[in-house]
Image 1 (cartoon, rainbow, N blue to C red):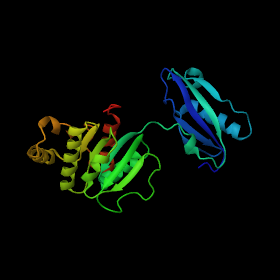
Image 2: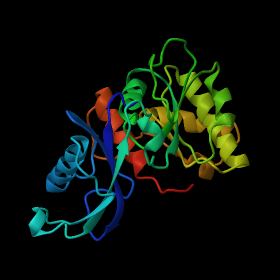
Image 3: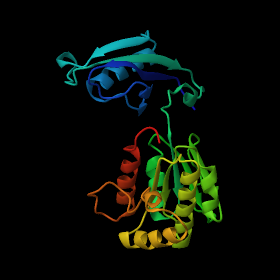
Image 4: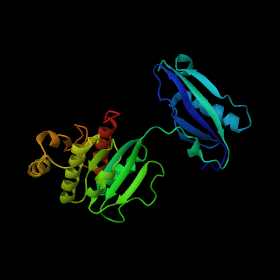
Length: 258
């Protein structure tokens, strides 16, 4: 909610090499800024224009910024910024050009799951977070693209996941993990609409699961859809936040479609 007048600055067009994409935004108040359109002198000038307008000056609807030597930025492209007034009391969220969100299903709200949930707030992800235990989730989740569900057994939630979901499995119980993996593979067999199935754990854990999945009738090709261990290669730390960064980087690198 905008409790004071703001100027909403949005990247409306671009050509060439630029620091931010179309739709990137920042909200400028007299004494604060939320968001960013790329930093540097581009943002410095845009902020100055916005604050001059807040102080009673005129406001250009759109300004063209060549990112060359004259602006002190060597990107080489061109950015067009749109400037809009947001009245005091108006809900800023209704005016924002929200990016599309990738559906992410997270099974488990332990230490690593909590770290992933914390970081995911600032990423273009629609998080569906599932745990079999009560009182595991944040008290004040984001309003957009966020769902928290207590489901026991958690594998029952697999059928309701959004099509195209990337799935991360890291419950507090290996038996739960196995049932979730089996439910995901069954859904893949029937619908083939999950973008990624990843499970936290060692290669030893996955080898044990593979034997049990084979006994359930899942083929080698079906089992190959599961990634375990998870996270981008080369990140060796085991602190929850380190694992979370490695895993979310892996999710963000996925293709846009299944």
